[in-house]
Every structure is written in C-alpha cells, then in structure tokens.
Image 1 (spheres, one colour):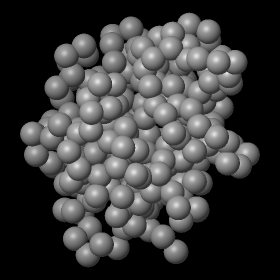
Image 2 (cartoon, rainbow, N blue to C red):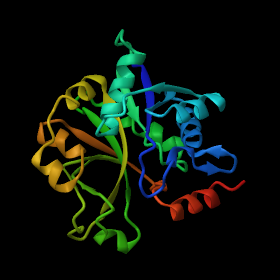
Image 3 (cartoon, one colour):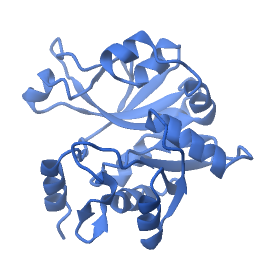
Length: 242
C-alpha cells in the first residue's frame, strides 16, 4: 500500500500581495486554511514547506507542522523536494502531493481526486482540471488550458498545456496547478533543466512532457480560487465566511 504525503510550499516573496501566506482570513493565516483543507483530504500528513520562520511559527501556533527549506528555490517543486528529503530520508513515502499555498478554498475531495490517475502504473504525474464555463477564460492567458484524449470517465491524458487561446469546439479545460508525483518522477523532474517549451509558456509541467513523462488529469467540477491580489483575498474571505 502506497504511502502519501502532502507538501504545501509557501514563501513570503509575493509582490502583488506581500506576506501572502500570513494574510488573515477570519482569524487564521491563509496558509493554515490551506493546510487544514489538505489534512481533510485524508490521504496523508499535510506539511508546509517554507523559507520563512514567521510562516513556520504561524503554522505551528495553529497546531500544524512545517519544515524549513532554503530561500533560493526557483519553483515549488524544488522546495517540496528539499522538504521530502529532510522528512523522509528512508524513502518510505512513494507519492508526493504538491498543494499550492494560495488555494484556501480548495475542496479536500479534489485533492483526493488527484491520486486517481496514479492507479495506472504508466502515469508519472497526476493533476487536475475543470471544464471551462466562462467564455472569457478561453482567451485569457492567465488561464492555463490542458488538452488531450479522455482515457476513462473523468480522466484525461494531458498532452498539451498552454496559455494560448483555446481552439476548436471543446469542451475545453482549465488546468488546476496541483500535482501528485510518484516519488521517482519528482526525483527525476528536479534534476532536469528547463525545456524550451517551459521557458516559452512559463509552465513548469511542460518540462516533464518534453522529457517523456506522462501526466494524466483528473477532471473535477470547479476551479479553486487562487489568491494572488488583495481583490482575490477579499473574495476568499467572502467565500469562507461562516
């Protein structure tokens, strides 16, 4: 039986929303809301990986667990890999779920859903997407679109990830940046240099595809709110009211 861990990368370097992980949402820092939802998924321990002592202190004050990592990481994948090595040098963990620290409204059931594609041994990495219902998203470069064949009900093989306009009749899918890695896939991924497609699109997952790794997508019902701006924070507070 596989052992799974959830790692939540959190850094304080946001420019659009300074101190983002500690932003207050009804008396709790945002990062604590994310950690609690990850814990509610019921698939493994949820631990914050951070380069901030203030974040670590806030998480621990709320009863959670956090691990300190270096400040020079270029991506959340690098940060969670450092945390994984520190937390599990014995290699007991074989699935690592990366939940972004700015998703305080994410549904715990959707976190669980990310494990589904990994039941297929051919899949290296699993992620999430939801059908696009707002037409404005089809041409929004901030919305990453994923496309590929449906391989079973509720599951797609991700062949393209792009910020470009969606083309064709659809349905089209909004990619959600949550990943479940086989440990071996994460270990390989962090050793690979950025690929040309990754650099062009500014999408880290393209590095995996460009190096022959398979990414499958669990299709869920909705996209969680990602908090990047003060306006997003106000929306999150309203959504989580009560």
